Image (cartoon, rainbow, N blue to C red; front, side, top):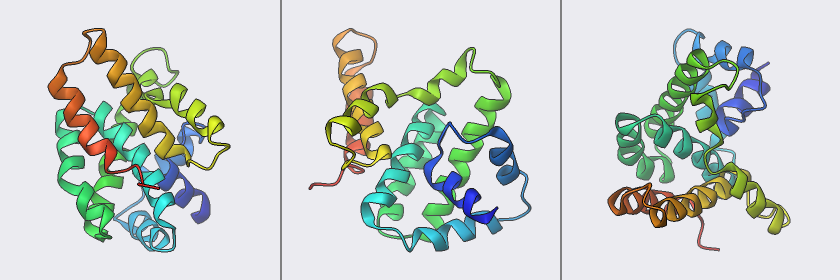
Amino acid sequence: FPFKVLIMLLSFSIELTDVWFASCIISPGLIPFLSASEFCSTLEYKDKMSGLGEIFKLLITGGSEAFTIFKNEVDGFISGSQKSLIKLIYTSLQVKKQVVEFDEFEIDIRRSMNYGHSLGHAVEALSKYTIPHGIAVVIGILIENKISLNRGLLSLDEEINIGTFGRKIIPDD
């Protein structure tokens, strides 16, 4: 059980069941988050950034307040702040919980959970999986945003704002 909770907290994978997701949300206190922060300290940098990529996606789709939390905490997360890690995990789980409760069967708004994934999966495959999933999703988001900008569906300010923070997740190598 703890291993599955940690995997869920770090990957935010849609394939995991809503039961596992709900068990983390209703767990008393911050015990799952503290365990996750301890586990995160054992991960390689690119794996942390991969998890951050999924958090990025959730907090963009969670609205301006959620994305502001991301913008305020991302540098702390990258530098190893446990407070930022917990805040980002908690906020992203709140967003996912609200979406799943509203659209349990992916009929409407839950499709937003796929943001960046179609192109992200292509990036993963083309890299022969040397680019981790969450980082590939961020790349997919940036490409999708550029297409949306070119079609007049996204403002230049939004594209720049999201792009600025998305590029913090993509390693230089």
